[in-house]
Length: 286
Image 1 (cartoon, rainbow, N blue to C red):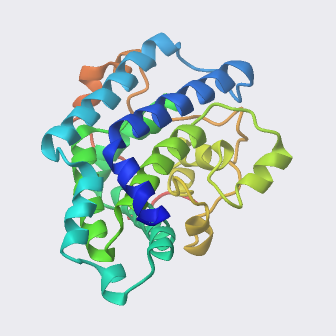
Image 2: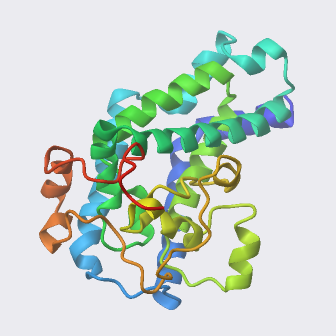
């Protein structure tokens, strides 16, 4: 058994424990950095926001396991047995296939992110993520369960289409969770370090722009992991207009403390109008 096969087997057999260790390790490191070097003062206490945000994470994790017990990694194994997708059909070597598929999966997530901003009915689902009036590590996992199910379906389709190996899917899942927590961190990185890092990964200052209350800034910097797609497709914005300390986080809706309650978060897609944020609305400046 080669190295790639052995690593794939190990990670597949221990997928859940590997993901849990990665999740909690990054969560603790980022939360610790937020306490030591915060970028912004929080509008609301963590006690107002964190219980709902963290509960959503566990709800979504359970939901995904109930809908697809074998998870995307298991689906990748199922697809590989049947030689579905681009990589097997082209005979791409295993190592290169893993690298290419991690990049392609990340690009797919970028386009998915643009899509949920562009289609008003999908924006209603996604805006729960943006309705957090503060920006910290828990914001990175705050997504409506219906959006999580939609995202799962898209992810499985992409896995089947490109023939992503199990190892690529697992690496991508771990990287996506880790970088989402990192780039939503309320962390004051040195500006010089931020300039270098954002050439290779989406940084907190880069992604924070995307959580601005201004629609023209909300509809920029869609990347979660790799920063290249925003530059390539013209959606990159280097800094917020008001600066990071003064910018307003969130939406013009759902700004009260009660809106951070779990029950109100779950019904947000069915409350109020879609608003002025969807990409296909052109009545905002920017």
